[in-house]
Amino acid sequence: LWTIKVELGFYILMPVILWLMKKICFNEQEKQTKKMNVFLGVIYAFSTIIACVIQLFIKKFNLHHSLNNQLPTFMPFFIAGMFFYFNYDFCFKNQYKMIIPAVIVFAAQKFIYLDFLLPLAVMQIVFFLAFNLKPFNNFDRQTDYSYAMYLVHFPIMNMLKSTNAFDTYPYFSMLCVAAFSFMLAYLMENFIQTKIK
Image 1: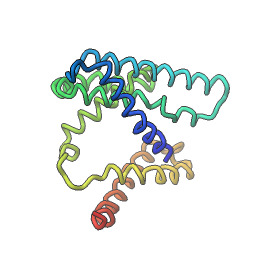
Image 2 (image 1 turned 120 degrees about the vertical axis):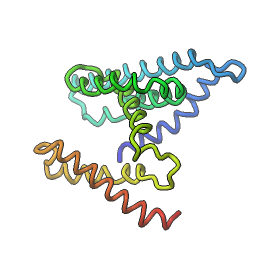
Image 3 (image 1 turned 90 degrees about the vertical axis):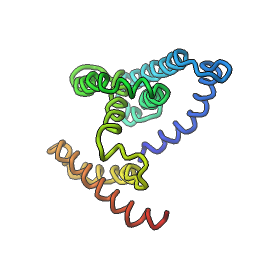
Image 4 (image 1 turned 30 degrees about the vertical axis):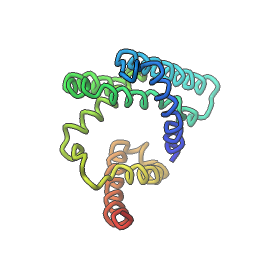
């Protein structure tokens, strides 16, 4: 559940980022797309550098790995999401061209240091799946399992981790987390959440 503090940090930073963006990138309330992309690029690059420095400090001074799970490390993912939002038409039009390099980066980053491109790759893959896989692209549906999955996946992962399942069967364990998370999210949404609504 450590991700909740990061999420709250983004909620606090969001108005500041948008205020700065409005001051720098808008001219008489008109959006200046190039300026906006440069602005987002600077934040993306700066936060990526900070994330790299944090990782170096962890290795050099033998610090706890949880320091890597702080807001600066995840800022590039947040900024990548903003980039896709503010360049929606371009991203939607070019999604089939962009998905191939995104998948290559996502696969190759396990072997080559491509961490600085990973947030953009992940965002492109999520964007592509959201618009091209039928179970995900029904945006007007009343039922939303994502938040329930967000809540239940962490305790499920910890239960499996306590049995060393991830060390012995990593892929099977990930499959179990996904399956049990969706099953519990389905039950929560249909038998608890619907009554609250």
